[in-house]
Image (cartoon, rainbow, N blue to C red):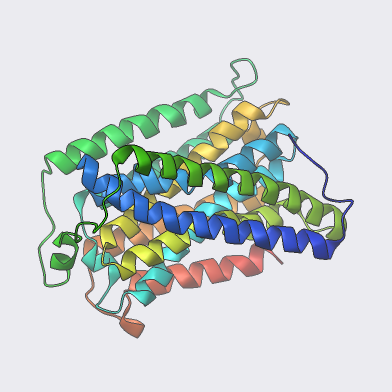
Length: 345
């Protein structure tokens, strides 16, 4: 249920916001470790587990925020949070590249499934634009594009599984890509699969609750400061609710699980597009795509461009570049930094 934090002082709201961000970061770290264990138990592989386990569960704070604020009629915050989260999380890959000192992260994490995930993301991002520019068809109060997004996502996961099991092409192996093929050491005190799932769901629920509180704190900040909902959603709440992706990606890179890091981010990004579809279900005053403004369209175009740069980087596979990171990471950092001046200006 929504609650009003605007009656509290700005200082207290910021404290609540910070505490929830830390909770999300802590839970995201635990989820990353549990996802690796579940991936090994299920045999799904790092890239698929990143999409299903880490990608979905660490996206819960943002999804809860967007859905709850859309239900309250705050479309700018809901849309800004969904799209801003994708932009922020793509930038996190560039930061993870800085942490991975052995070479270019996109070189080391090259895989057919990684390329497929990014292609799925770009394809899904085109649907909201079509819904915005096309006729405003409605099924009750839901736009058909929202239903289509869920269908595309499910079909995409099915394709990812097929690509992983029977890839029609493979990236060239190098001394860097061999690192990801190493198996993690078995746990000294292995947990049961039931306990792992219990912990996974517990931490996922914790991040969801924290995400809802952050959404209400964001609305309170808008009321008190007069800042635009789009700016607060695109940067403030989006970065905060995306903190699990950042923490888990850095943790995965440090453990050498580079494919899990990429699968976490790109898989989470594809799931984040579903924030818009879920928000459209929750929004009761028409299609949420009709509420798009120029800043929202700018953010979608930014994310498509950043995803394209990432895709080209994974295909090019530069071993090392400026600051020991790939040119694509430099470009993504520059694009995101430049967007701040436009969207927050």
